[in-house]
Image 1 (cartoon, helix red, strand yellow):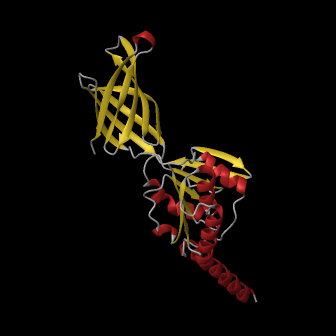
Image 2 (spheres, one colour; image 1 turned 45 degrees about the vertical axis):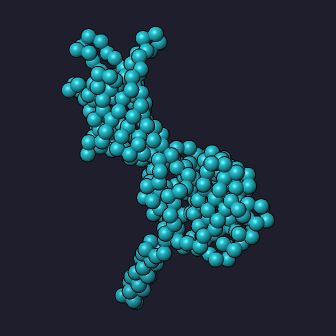
Image 3 (cartoon, one colour; image 1 turned 45 degrees about the horizontal axis):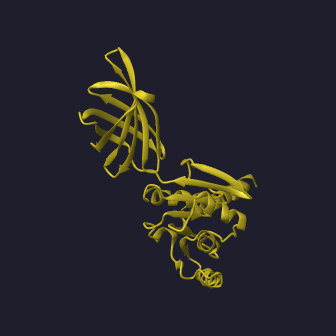
Amino acid sequence: MKETARRWLLAALFAQARLVDAQDTGPVHDAPFVISPPATVEEMLRLAAVGPEDLVYDLGSGDGRVVIAAAAKFGARGVGIERDAALIEQSRASAARAGVADRVRFLQQDLFAADLGEATVVTLYLSPNLNFKLRPALLRLKPGTRIVSHSSGLGDWRPDRKTTIRKDVLLWVVPAQLSGRWRAQVGAAKRSILLQISQRFQEVSAAAVVEGKPAQVWEASLEADRLRFVVVEDADGKAEAALYFEGRVQGKVIAGTVTRGAGRDRVAEEWRAERRD
């Protein structure tokens, strides 16, 4: 009897393991349609600062309510991506009734086949697993693209903001990719600064070498494609000088303004850095 019970237990454990494995490796696009409360939909779009210049992509658009609200209440254009043909037809009918059919589209597609390159805002109401699997594609979007999710996070990518209006609403801003070595020139004299930047999502840190001498870097921050940091250099041990850098990342180039000093002693110059690896 004990041997029979052991065999039954092993069989049950094996079946459970196969079920878990099937759930992990099965079609990642299979997600049930769950309705978002109207107040949460509006909060998603408000938190993402959606406006008339935006193109909102809703992944797993269901009955189309997020895309329709983006057009009807915020003046944006929208695209809904949904696999269920019946929900696509329902969404198109609802858009027509709302008078926004000319500003929205609904596409019957797999989420992972969708081209998101034109999106300025991406909205999600998916499972944590689906969100995580979409994360690499989301990180490849243009810096500054806003991603807003109803309830579920994006793994260890910390949201930039979080609110709760009936449900949790989480916002991320896609950061520029900065990790690596950069060589900067500052001002008309083209002073040389070497930067080694480390990055994990929107969180950055840096080390600097100014004219061949190590210098401390403070308050490094990245928001979309806007980089800020402060370099404190020691002028031959006589006096410290703080250099306040602000710049915009454009691919392999960062360009902006560096300010030295404060008050009446404030002096501003231009700076430019190029990626070296």
